[in-house]
Picture 1 (cartoon, helix red, strand yellow):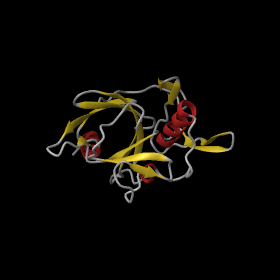
Picture 2 (tube, helix red, strand yellow):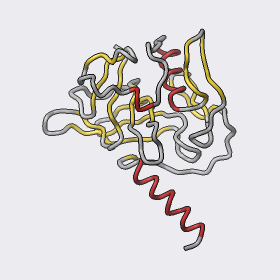
Picture 3 (tube, rainbow, N blue to C red):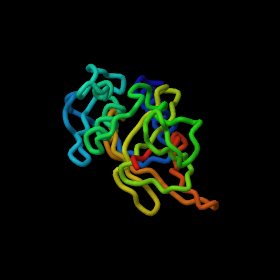
Picture 4 (cartoon, one colour):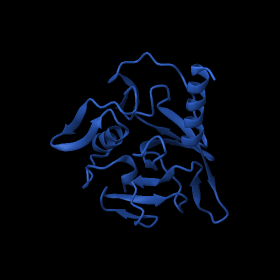
Length: 195
């Protein structure tokens, strides 16, 4: 096997094991770390290059927003700037935003948000924080904001999805036989909402 073939195979394997169900577009990038690449309600999404890149910690008025420009930093900055919301527990990896001990539709006290499981009796809404579990290649999980909701899919906006992944992707959504709403991605643990 050639080196190019091995690299292509690894990238394909990573894509299909971590993004099953996503309609994801890959593109090349010539962006600089820290460059604004998207926004939601005037809250900017910044390019981070490789997913492990860290520039330092971002804080506002003593509140920890997270490591620049990780996925957590965007969602916490969005909730802080758009909703004026500070989470009681301002630390933790992305997957820890979802508390498996909290029942569907009940308050997640660590984040001071209402938590919904995947599937849930509540349909996702624009502005919900979506939480994804860890993978073999990403032990920390991922968080993003739901930026649009359609009949059979959602759009999310995300920071730090990787150097060649778009800041916005769509994921399939359907209502199962029990009337529950399910985001069709095996990584999605659930979503959190500001009431």
